[in-house]
Image (cartoon, rainbow, N blue to C red; front, top):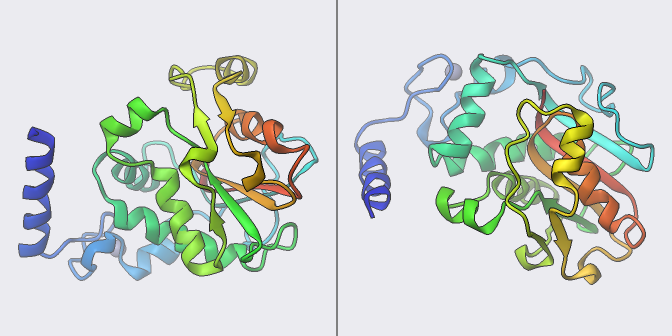
Length: 231
Ligand SMILES: [Zn+2]
């Protein structure tokens, strides 16, 4: 209840006082929280021409597209921005970032995202989603869908059945163990013969993507991953 009151109060506050850019403090940014200049210049692009798949990720070759907008800057502005999307209820910003990503995905030569593509936002455990109020990966997927017309897999299609401990501080092989059996596909027909793009805010070792992709790979077309940042 307190959280709801707080949120409502915060929304009112946002209405009465213009929102300033999270990076430069410019106050002309409506509810997107990032001014157009910072959106285009504040963060380090992860792939210079915006088209290549990311090189640094060690995912198997059958994941044909790995597209990420920016390099993660530990302790920097991008970390701050993503933290706000995740925990401070800046849902509109999550969608805006997704739209930016969506524009790049229209041209991705490895897996072209179209109406024929299905987006799979990495599911949160229901308990965690209730606590947070939303799933930040879904917001990003919503933005991608706005631009590309791609479908978003219904929430009921894949469930996170285990509330895994945080991945922070685990190495790649322990991350994979931590996630093993964490997801369950309940409606495979959603993915059957469709190109699927797994959507997340940050990709680190790729363990989450790998776990999800392994469950559907025998049934779907191409598989890709799209994220806002790569750590
Ligand atoms: Zn700015």
